[in-house]
Image 1 (cartoon, rainbow, N blue to C red):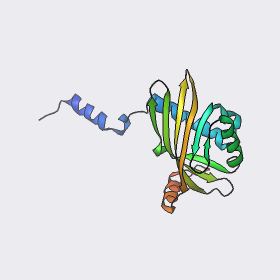
Image 2 (cartoon, helix red, strand yellow):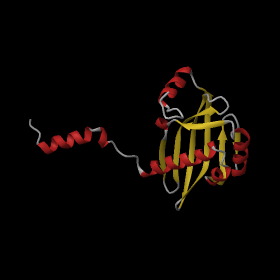
Image 3 (tube, rainbow, N blue to C red):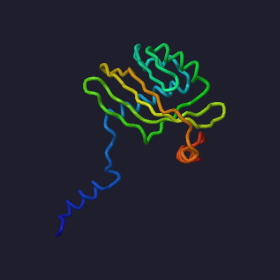
Image 4 (cartoon, rainbow, N blue to C red):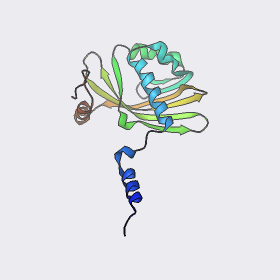
Length: 170
């Protein structure tokens, strides 16, 4: 059976890596929000960081407990994070799901690097619920869980995939 030439081109276009689907607009938006909130987190810019959270945010942390307001989240960030650790998203784990008439669920994994040593040994899972109000997005719920030390194999795999501060692969 012969395929018409236009069918062959269509088949090649669909199979081509260049034809891979672009992220949907919601994923693009939430990815940008994630970058913004954690840029502020990593630089201890608590004013900017706080703007991402609803005043009544519920934050559940497997080792730190539960908090139910923005100010406590900011206080805990100041006390336990600022000047101590940096968060790095593991991009391949990021997933975004819409919540009808509300916003989005963001889930993924991230690792934590100690600023004093530069060692990136902690890893955890997270779920963030984002509420959309017009053009404004706020975090209303956070689950941060599964905190553990990375295995040597995980550290090695991530270190080779992550560019160094000077732009060179590790």
